[in-house]
Length: 439
Image (cartoon, rainbow, N blue to C red; front, side):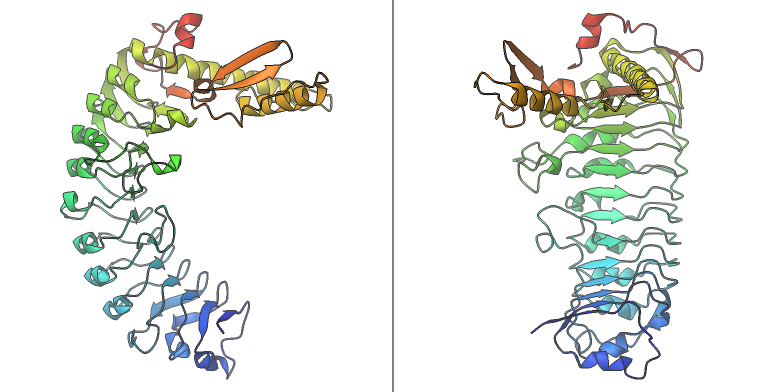
């Protein structure tokens, strides 16, 4: 029989606390949110076979160095040390090679030893989920560098090092990191975007926001859309295609000091659903190639947002981007109108946001179903198997909504006179132009 031990709260000064170690079949130990101080008491486990240990939210300052992974915690697969006061990690700690999930967020660790390379089971695919999750996190510490040995963790899907003091990327062979799906190094002290990132053909998310990035955006980032041979161009969000074939979905470089022009190669990233280059020092004209970006999720209803505000662009908005700019203006007007209607609505009826069209249609379908006394079938738009349209019968009226109408294809920019960007070339009162949202 396996034991799950949850102790909330407990007195760790109790004379019999060390007897937890006699529970040879212990699989789950939860000591979260206590006032545990000092070093992590691995010794109290002795020969216990715990799989998961949760020590989040305590006052732990260190880790014992006399760890024997064979006799003590050789079966340990998850260790949660978030929100403590740990300042260093002894090299012996990384002998816990059975670990598959390690959470070290919100501590005071300034150095990640090269021995991290020994933990080759971290984030192992298939043992936790059918899709990559975050099972090694190091956010909110005082780390100044990522050791190059991290490249030896061949099962590590995600780099989660946000909110540290990292000044540069590790020196690794990027072409060997094809397993990497997500990089989050936001809120650090990075100064350059390495062009080699473009070699990561399976990357789906890149977040380098709120750093000290200078220079230009490397055109090589356009290579993120070059998927390996034999891969189906789907993302994990669709829940379809091969699990090993991914497409870049989001790039966030906002709140930096990037200069120069936007490389036209970004237009190759047709699967993007979010591109945020706001609050930089970018100049020049907007490349028309951005109009090609449609989002992998267009077949599944995902929105596409391009945020270029807080820069110093000039010239006219390319006609290829006008429908998206007009859509943003329409969205702002509709939201303002909705807010005014909501504030002035004194009745008990619910005001439905015009930007929640699905809610509107669901309510309409329900009303139609309840009021349909003719016995004719009412087809639910959410039971239709057609990938392109869905249908609603409304008595004598047959209405069809294209799924494109459910998406926001938005372009957020600063226009003249705030900048030299001429937005007047987009005639947003022209219905033909406004309806042309599928460029």
